[in-house]
Image (cartoon, protein in one colour):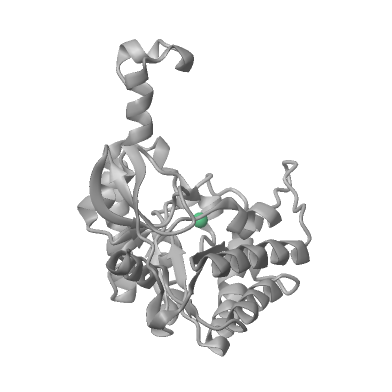
Length: 300
Ligand SMILES: [Zn+2]
């Protein structure tokens, strides 16, 4: 933004200025296939953001209580989730900040060995939009390198921490040759992300706050944030999202966090979603990577 624009209030901006802002990162063509793999009518992409201790570290790392909550995600919740995925033979995607992967390298190797995907989720769960371009680029490249070093698999997708997308994020994703992003919400089905109106070939696997467990269950001791939706109601929302996606012949994408969904009183939500989806014919469970690649290759 140049100096002249900085002095203007948004209601004073000339049309060209707000159009440039809106068009910088924008949904382009739909990558929606007629049918999914093997003729399936609906794709289910489950994801788990394994933030673990980085949720506290990125804010300064002062609370050992909150860091123990992150460790609970590693000790109890990820194994619990992996057991359910294994029981139903389902592959999912885990987005892991590089620092969380360095603290828990065995967890990442176990996830990959079980056939799941690991995607980039920042270095220490930093917010991209407050970083200068050079720092954001450096952290994204180092994060991908770190995950590759630990798991021996190069990540092909990025979920920005907190779904926070800077004006530079898309250009860095393009430079990294990523197949897909999963941080934006312009649709319920996959689409191509445009950069200043130009095609990038990068697939968006769109997310949504209504399909995120954290929205309903987050709690902060010293702020007024408390869980306000009973677990059964959260399940109801997720099942309605799935049913409508199934009806549409589209994509059902879900975001969960091990340290949020993994509790004894909540893990049934994951299992019920899987059982419900599995009870319908023609449902393809896949990683975000496989959904992105299939959607792009078979878009009508
Ligand atoms: Zn996260």
